[in-house]
Length: 450
Ligand code: SAH
Ligand code: SF4
Ligand code: F3S
Image (cartoon, rainbow, N blue to C red; front, side):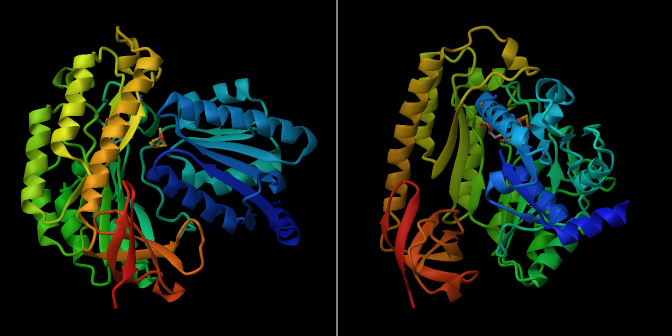
């Protein structure tokens, strides 16, 4: 039966379309999904209408993304009416949250894979082709099982590497601990092997991923600190840059700051989600730090690491957030001066503690607060970037700029700022020096320095 399937797929190339929602962890999971599809002899298409297989790798951190996914499933249902052999699979966090309820609500879905079952895509498709029965695989197995899973990476310069999955923090608003399960670190040697293989294959940047990288290694039989893992990676000769997300302010250690300071490869950029500038709200969020602690860490980072950039995540409209709480956030942003931020309107997620809290904030107020905070941050980012005009920055060239103008390249500084400049294709994958000529809140524009 298996042979027959393989023969069929060789004779008639099947096409798969995959859409990824959510964080970098999901982006990396999709690279594993695509690796398995290639192994099954699928070609990947950008055109959903031409696909024989559609996979949605889903997120549910906020309600609006969930709604987008449901409305896309509704569209695919219509395509399936005319395209009888089309298969539809839902993977990732929304699949993990809703489980078999998805089948009840959307009978057009053929299979569901949870967040720990990404590696099972290949066997799932094989089974589905044989039995034509719906498949659900969401039992939360707690094993890091990506080692032998084929992967097809999105680019050949910067590689995402998961060092841990899951989260134990239970911030009161957040669904991630429910969808990704408890923290689970990947073994040091497995990470080092992967990093070594990547650099041998020409990758320049290793981008470490975890929901809370600062608590890496605590669950391993022989516990290892995150800063120790970084030192080991730093010792791999051909790695040019090391990045990581996300750091939790309650766990970021002085040892880590020292490690960043002493390493030439770990990028001078820390993404440190603050979430709110009000101590009352931080307590309700169960973040386990206050604004004083946060400011102390920022001062320590800026004191020890030269030329560092700090970015953050923040939420507006958490239940009980008064005008005063919000103005505390504005004031703190004014004081800290982040290089950039991702800002979100608080979204009520079922099963989370905050969904039961009184004093939910009206949408209009949330929108106004988001608008005010975005405007403030835009002015701050503009000013910070303006100061870089005339300076020379080191840029890892990632590819052509999004606008695809001939010979216009784009890359990232070690402070994680995007830079656009003119240059030859041959520079892609290299570190070059660029003098900044212009800037806005998000991007630097420059010229190559010979
Ligand atoms: N592990 C990371 C963040 C993961 S989720 C951390 O702890 O920082 C990414 C961001 O989504 C969070 O930082 C938070 O700002 C936002 N987020 C999470 N749950 C949310 C919710 N219910 N509503 C709005 N934003 C939310
Ligand atoms: Fe969610 Fe908090 Fe865990 Fe981040 S640390 S994933 S915000 S529960
Ligand atoms: Fe979304 Fe899951 Fe990531 S909920 S943000 S895809 S961990």
